[in-house]
Length: 272
Image (cartoon, rainbow, N blue to C red; front, top):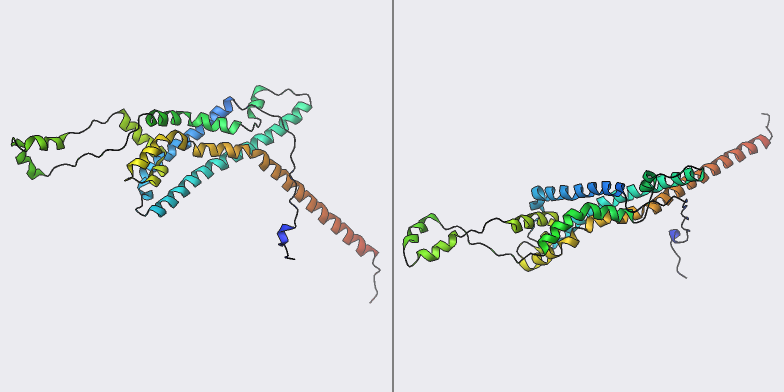
């Protein structure tokens, strides 16, 4: 029979979950934390504005990997932030339940601070709502990129007065005005820059698809906060399990030390 690995036979330690007072998903605290999510999104757009050219690489597979790593890193940052907030709210909810058992009534502020599994998603969506609306406004009017003609060299200006060539050359002087759609395009592309970069700046069809999906793509990182927050209950249980495991280990050491001292007292002393 094949031998199993040493770690496979070890039983997974059960998690210790303590009861807690369930809070509210919709609260002022969730909206306040949502401003932090909004700040992360705005900061990412600013960073892409200054450092985005570092992610533009001609090699398709390398560009895709690098931009996926950037997306994963940003999502991981918000995931860890949500997990930290979730674990802290569970800890507060445990204390709030003990206070309630002692006869102290839970206030509105207490319920807003206590853990609720959906509070993280409410926080994430409230923070990203403004960004989603901006992306939605542009996605509804997004069109395929068209490229303008470049400037003519100075020596061609002499031919602009000729009746047979002049009208054709005047076409090169047509310039489209910078409008609201152009401003929205710039903002949206900065907000979802890694996805745009994966599509490739020369692939107009793929970029159009990315722009139309921008209201969903911009939620990838914020929703990671909600997932991390929902895991706060498990992370709190891991802390309790670790504390209990350390307490058992310390008690076992004390018993061994006490048994060793008792054994030494029972042993007769030999005269030299």
